[in-house]
Amino acid sequence: MPDLALLAIALALGGSIGYLDSRPAWDDTGVTAGALLASAGLLGWLGPHRPWLWALAVGAWIPLWGLVSTQNYWSLLAPGIALLGAYGGMGLRKWI
Image 1 (spheres, rainbow, N blue to C red):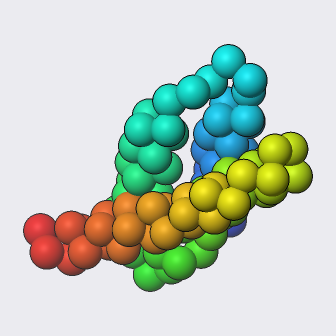
Image 2 (tube, rainbow, N blue to C red):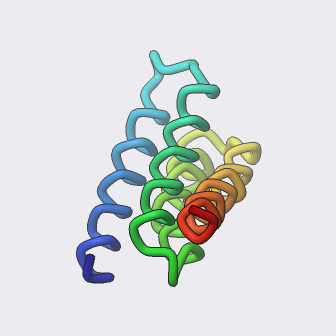
């Protein structure tokens, strides 16, 4: 897949997850973390040559929403979860 298409998918997935996580009624951190991990993992599988870019595009939205709206500094952990997913997807593809 072309990198531009994967970047657009990553930004859309990350923005959607970030928006859902920022809703006042949403209080399920585990589902959010799982969605970040799975989304970044899939992108790492599809584009194994740039996992850092997919992780950044998916994981940067949670801190942006969290810091701006509620000053939630724990949201800074989200890019790390996305990095684990993206590099895990890349590693799985290279391993299989």
